[in-house]
Length: 111
View 1 (cartoon, rainbow, N blue to C red):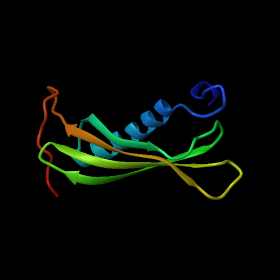
View 2: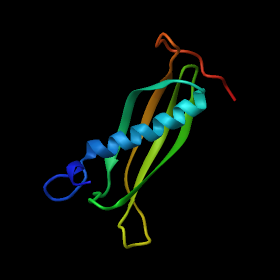
View 3: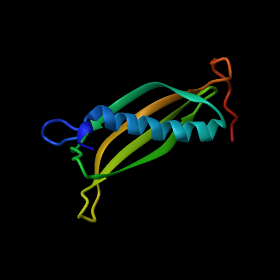
View 4: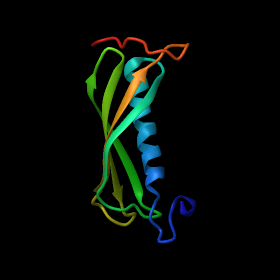
């Protein structure tokens, strides 16, 4: 939406990062069957801008699961509304920690 963009119509990187964090958080919560929190984000690279009106798709893949934490790779793609081809616009690695009801790290069940 226009409120999420700069004066040139490009979406703010922070808005896109928030979308990516939300997607990774859903993936993490599903894997740990409970609450997981973001503790780090590494290697975010912007490859192309996203414009107001573009369709944005976010994809996640769990890369590693440790005792209480996991890393999730996240890619974001954009497609102009009148085109068929999508373009990768950014990528990053998010680290999440599973937490218990007292907000302390808890073990992740290994599959």
